Amino acid sequence: MSTQNAFEFKALPYSYDALESFIDKLTVEIHYCKHHKAYYDNFINAIKGTEMESMDIKDIFRNMSKYPIAVKNNGGGYFNHTLYWENMKSPGNDAPSGKLSEAIIKTFGSFEEFKKQFSEAGKTRFGSGWAWLCVDNKANLFVCSTPNQDNPLMDIAEKQGIPLLTIDVWEHTYYLKYHNKRVDYVNGFWDVVNWDEVAKRYENGLKSISN
Ligand code: MN
Image (tube, rainbow, N blue to C red; front, top):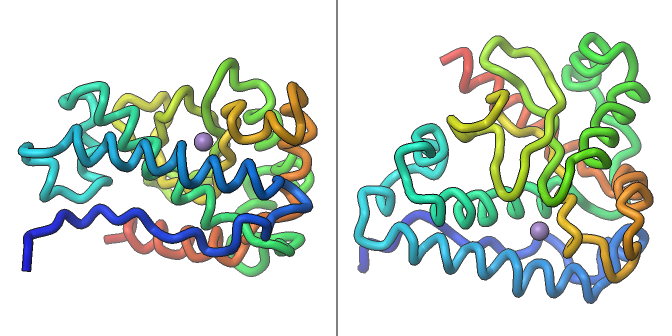
């Protein structure tokens, strides 16, 4: 057996047309097969022959400022897109339940207010980037956005935390269907959120910070 690295380009958890109510088939196909795959390939290239090949990607992000910008851009692009695909499904769950629901209401006042703040983070991110719901190392939820392919696990992030939910707001994500209307794209996102997956990330996140 070869000592293959642990970085896997995971299959999409649904077909290209599964999210049609939100995003068209062609966009999903190009986004996954071209954009996401290119980040993955470039990331693997960028870490070739370095200590990063045998590291956990989260440890790379934790030490991001030590490493070349190609690792940040492509490692972020690789990792962020996997989270994005997996936190969507169709039909989505209308709302979270259980502990995550309680934490959202406690933090933001209501589920509607959370949606407003998260949407706003996506709509107002200048240029290209991502909006996030995260849990910080004191178990508090927060909403933020990051530029380019940065994410909140990176030591260079303005606010650091464990990602629970994310939306890609690069133009390549919405331009074919929504043209310049990022607002409509962000509003449509709520129909396909996989809250079961987000709840799982929250549970795992809480476990990892209590250890
Ligand atoms: Mn993208």
